[in-house]
Length: 75
Picture 1 (cartoon, rainbow, N blue to C red):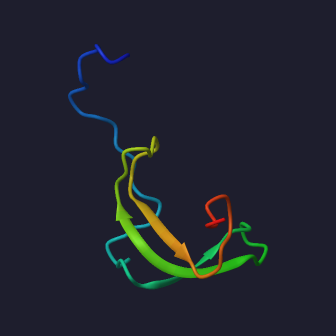
Picture 2: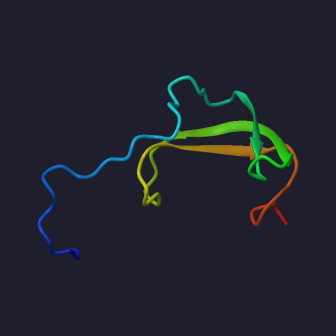
Picture 3: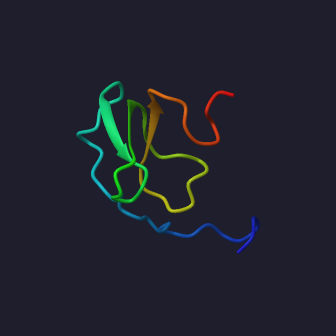
């Protein structure tokens, strides 16, 4: 624990929720933001892969929405 702790021999890995090998950067997608209640947003896949900030591990998929939504809406 801490930055001076010896590195783990086998860091824990978490499998991605859905295999992303078929998701291609530049492809179009639809994201359900409501958890099944019908709030769907369309966009373009801009990133597929691991990140430095993701604590859960696995792969992340970055989507650029067609319309501004959320805290990073360009305003």
